[in-house]
Image (cartoon, rainbow, N blue to C red; front, side, top):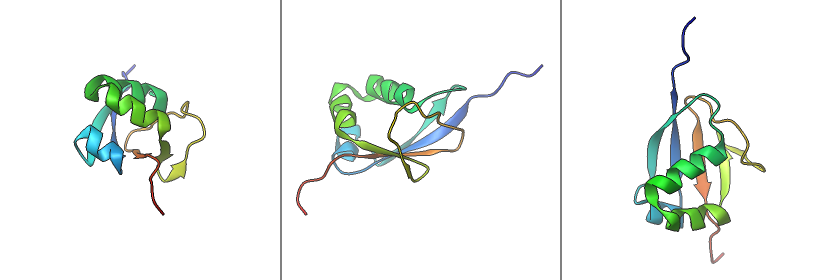
Length: 89
């Protein structure tokens, strides 16, 4: 029996999230069954609590589909977009 190999996802940051994360995008490793909430916790550990505040106010797209729950599983090769609210109009 073979052991499942971990995957990778690309996190893309927009607006203030990009500024706080210090990058426009990054590749992250995924364990089997990693959810968006798990990934948010990992990214908070990596980048600090300032990004956690951004995450709390942000919307997320998983492969260009809006998420209403952070319990969605992130699959290998996925794109997770972090969209903080924007001011202005």
